[in-house]
Amino acid sequence: MNRHIRYMSMLSVTVLLLFTTGCWSSNEIEDLSVYVGLGLDVAKESKFEQNINQQGASYPKRKVLTATVQIVPPIAGKNEKQSGSAPSSPSKAYLNEQLTGDSLIQIFRQFSLRRDRPLIGHHLKVIVISSELARKYSLEQVLDFILRDNDIRPSCLIVVSHRSALEALSSTEPGEIPAFYLTGLVDNRYRSNKILPPMSLIKLDSTMQSGKSFLLQNVVTAQSEHKFSGAAIFNGNTKKWIGELSQYEVEGISWIKEDVVGGALKTYTAGDGHSITYEPKNSHSSIIPKVHGDDISFHIKIHSEGRFIEDWSFPEIPTTEQYMRELEQQFEEEARKQIGQALDKMQHVYHVDVGGFGEKLRIKHPGVWRKVKDHWDETFSHVPITYEVHMKITDFGSSID
Image (cartoon, rainbow, N blue to C red):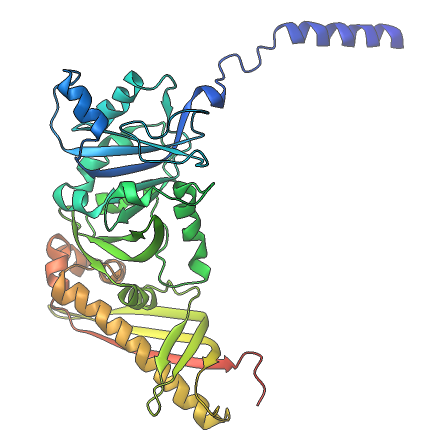
């Protein structure tokens, strides 16, 4: 009986194997052009495009934007100094290629005319948009194809480059892939409150649909090295770039929006001007909307606990209760300066709400919000805002005195 069962089991397994197709439709990664980064700039044709256009190898298009795709892994032995590609050394782990046109989907299809391996965007990590392009065209226009395309993951990161997107996707560091480098910087938020919460493609889409003004992380580049610095401001109505916040102002925004998860708050002593630094460990903020008739105002409450982490005073002052309270007051004043500067930029320079005030008003006073939502940015520019900051130093690190 056991032999019969064993025989039937083996026969069943053998029959099933005949009907197992496996990955019959799979493509080897070596046969694909996997692009992990996409850069979008104002149109500037490469030498390759200029040369082939002179030979009549062009098609009907306007010069609107130049798309850069960052491909990994590059073709082994490919001459990476070919026209139309960013200059690259053999040790580079990526290849940047560019084409210019007025339709992103058509540009992607044009790559099929010059690459034997088709482009595939399933692993796109980051989209870099130059501020110059975002100033000229709405993000809804620029990203229309990307938002419709189901090949691109909605979780990919969106950032804005201070200069060209190509520069932000270029590096001279051997083995470094700039697209991975930029996405890795976002993971350092627990170390710095100068880094905005990541804006994914799907989150950006919903934000634009809401009509609210918003911020995108700004990237600056020098000598092929990159740094997150400040934030790009986008108008909720036009979806266009209108200006920037500095690193200092982004810190102010982080206090307002309860985004402080790390970083350092530095100020200077009143007497000798030495630097002193506070490390926030636990912070909480609340925006309280107040409505009296037709008058709208806001009050911000911020509470933070942290560590007195660095003191350049010499000789070092003994850490008495009185001295600790003086330090707390100095750090509170510095945080108020950051908040005040950020509010001034929002209300009096760019006239947009990127601090989440409108959302708080919508939740607490929906009837009032319905009256002002269509012109909220302009209304916000004249709304009184007060704020209070309370900081408590819980320890002095490992210092003993």
